[in-house]
Length: 362
Ligand SMILES: *Cc1c(COP(=O)(O)O)cnc(C)c1O
Image 1 (cartoon, rainbow, N blue to C red):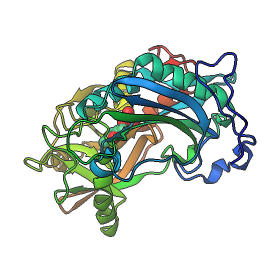
Image 2: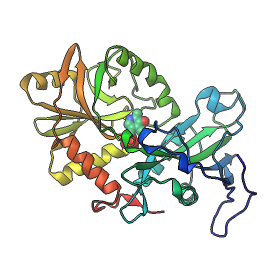
Image 3: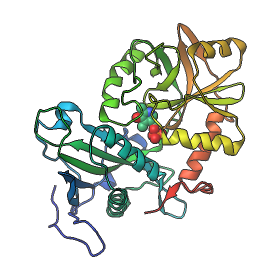
Image 4: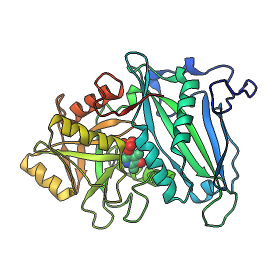
């Protein structure tokens, strides 16, 4: 792709190499697989022996990495994900990036990668969003998904903490089509375990996702969309579903499993707990077993199940396979899931008052 010569703009902290012609006009928002089209630019910076260097904004595209790098050999690689939306006034607002910034550094520390200074994270985001502002869809079309990625670049095979790392910030427009308006079905699995105490389940390493794909393929072979993950110790308690946090509504109470080390502390999960409080919906963070769900189903009090995560926001679930019993959950327009989803979307897009100070403006 042709680019103009390297120039530092008057206002930019970082050198910016701009693409000559944007690919923006080719985006078909109605038919856009998640993360399949990337905005024109990316932010790149390296950490070498503890010092940040080489920060710049350059055209989005391939980059060179040694095949022996720690990222490729040993999965020293991690990511984050959150969204920017357009308000009715046309402003760009980002949903709770401070939460992702903190979680980013918690994951980095778990993999003995240097923390990214808060200021670098926000400066990089501010400047990249400024350069690629034209990629932000209207709220009716979708959102701009922001993907920070961070990985080890040392070309050495010793299994010791590295000395060189690369941070990349990139953005991809996502359609509303991916906000999970359709329902999905799930089956509880004991064949696969997502996370174990002492492992990395509460962090966001790249390797959180690779090992889950075979489980979802197995679920699909059984006629479900994805799996419900159970605890790896007893195989009794629900932990997450697919790559989302898990929620149930039983007899009017919303229940989500507690953050005890094997569950990813989702920003969406945290936000929904707050919205339940706002709505006066009883909400409990506690362990919930497959047995309890089957008992509630038998008693007629099992009302809803849904997943939560940045990509789909609130994902309603209409069928659960639990130890051979198929639990079907009728969908209602005034369900807890629907109310939380509408409220969250309203706040994220500046249509409902940001009463918790969740929106960040670049
Ligand atoms: C990212 C992620 C989630 C959702 O977290 P959000 O911050 O709400 O996007 C849930 N589970 C896993 C395993 C994840 O990696």
